[in-house]
Length: 201
Image: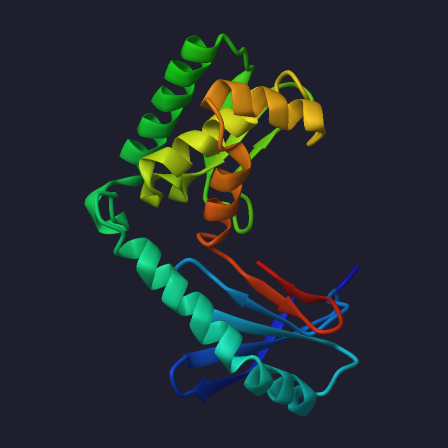
C-alpha cells in the first residue's frame, strides 16, 4: 500500500505566487500541475531530491506564467458566464439540457449524462454511451461548448477518432471540426509539465 502524498515545502515564485512542493510515492516523474483556481503544485517522486524539483520548477516559470495567463483570458472571455455568476447546480442543469437539445437535433442517442469538475478532460463518452462533461464548459464560448458536446455525442456512434469519426462530426457541424478542436486546445484548464515527457496541455 503506497503512502499518501505529503506537502514537503512551499516556495514563492515571482509572477507565479506560492507553489506547493509535494513528495509522492506514486509519481514517476517531476511534474507541475496548474489547477483551474490557479494554484500551482510541483510533484516530486520519492527518489528525487527537493532541490532537483526546485530547479525544474524554476526552469518552467515561462511555461507556468503562459498558462496562468490563458486561465485569466478564459475567465475574462466576453459573453460567457464567469464562475462567480452561476451556481454549480445551474451549470449542471444548463449542460444537461444542452445535451438533450443537441441529441434531439442531431438524432443521437446516449444513456446518461454526468457533470464533474474534471482535471484534464472537457468531455468523454463511455462504451455504454454515458456522456461525461466538465462543469467548466459553461465558461467556454458557446460554439466551443457545443463542439465538445457534439463531439461526445458523435462518439455514441463511432468510438474512436478515425477519419470516419471526423467526417461524421464535420457533417454535423457543417464543416470546421478540426479547426474548432484547435481552438479548444488554448482553453485547456489543467496543464501538466513532466520531466522527460515534455509538456501536456
